[in-house]
Amino acid sequence: MERFSKQTKVYMKLSGAFSEIGDQDPSSPWPKEKIVEQMRPWLDVLFRFFPAERIMFGSDWPVCNLRGPGDLSWKSWRDVVELILDNYAVSEEGRKRIWQGTAIEAYRL
Image (cartoon, rainbow, N blue to C red; front, side):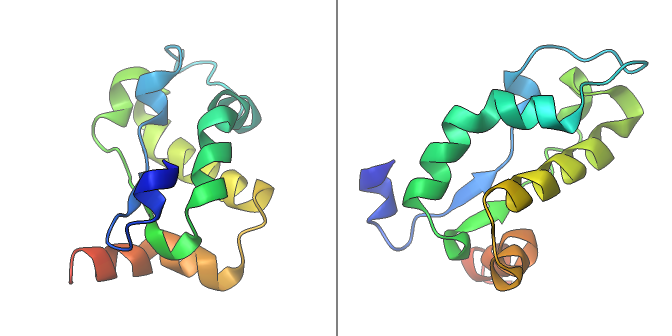
């Protein structure tokens, strides 16, 4: 990751969590804090090497429905990302980049 981070045209997508953690029961989804804790080893590396300007949100939809909490998966993932941004003290400008600005730049939209 450190080597990738030195390449200015390399971006990271914040996505894929539900496919990497245990299956969730839609009637009793994991608390978002538990999901963030499960992701912490990867998140620590991501935020250590990449600034918000090179991280983008990935919705994971519809893949998130496979192992996420059913119909609530997309909303749940969005809420998890908000908690991640809080936990890593991402600035308001950084949040704008992660939610949309980085993708606009990377994909030249």
